[in-house]
Image: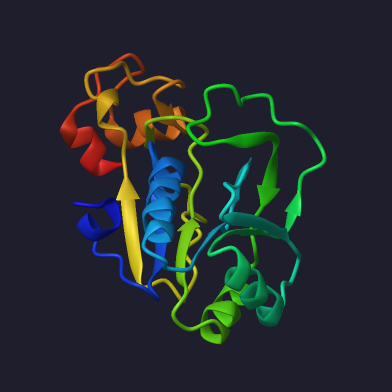
Length: 200
C-alpha cells in the first residue's frame, strides 16, 4: 500500500502535517507517489522548511502572493510543485542529514489566507502542507500559536518519531523540552514512554 493510500489522501485533499519526526519525509514520499500516477500536487508550508531540490518532474516557485494562473501553468508542466513565499537570506546550519534533497537555505511559508484562496482557485490539486516545526526532534510540545493549520485543510496528519521511545527526555529528543518537563511532571533524562507521547 502506498503511504497516501494508508493516510486516505485523495486528489483535491488539503493535508496538513503536524507534530514531529517525519513530516518532510512523509510529504516528499507522498508527492512522489502522486506524481508517479499523474496526480498534480503542491508541497508547501505555513512555517519554514529547507528549500527542496525538486526532481526533473518538479518545480519550485517562490512568490509572496502567487497568482493561481501562474501556479496552474507550472503544474501543467511540472505536476510536482513546491511553493513558498521567499528564500531566507542566511544559510541554515543544520543540513547534511536532512531526509530529502535540499539546499542550505530555508524558505518561508505562505500566509494562510492566500493558501485558502489558492485552494479554492485550483480545484483538484492535492496540497501537502508542512504546518508545524520541531527543529529535528522526535517529539514536540506545541506552543499556543501552533500548529499553523490553514482553514482549508481537509485532513490533519499528526506525526511522532517512535524511535525516540525509551530515549531520555532532553533537547535532542523533545522540542521545547522545558515546557515538556513542566507539562509531563518529569525531569529531563526521563525515558520517553508512549503515555508521554500521547500527552504531548
